[in-house]
Length: 152
Image 1 (cartoon, rainbow, N blue to C red):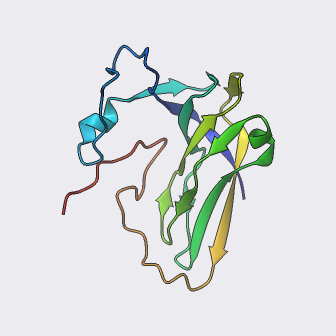
Image 2: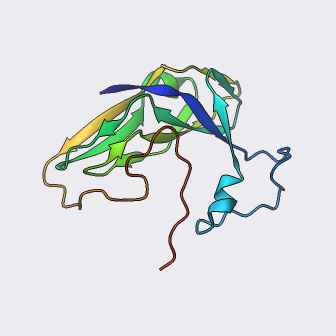
């Protein structure tokens, strides 16, 4: 299934010139504030600078059937321009907009526009052996940054 990107993105502020985050900032996956402080929302179109990354979401909500796993992938044309994506898996029963990380590995900025068809969603069906999804990201809308882990 072809998917387009939505109208906003979240840029990870991982450049040492960022005035909001000190260079020594440490992200603690159990403390939400340390996660929130390194992100900035941007509207598309957006020129993703070289060697920078962005979180994008799909332009529509996805419902993964209970007997399937969804695998979100970057289309090859965008990869040929220098974009790399993280592996994004949607568990059985997931419902919401999918978020994917994109990294610009090229030496040039790459223009991202809302509605760009840059993603493919594959459904892998069968008895997965996985429980129905009921995690932190169920029913998410738009780009969703990382949510702090719960300490056991």
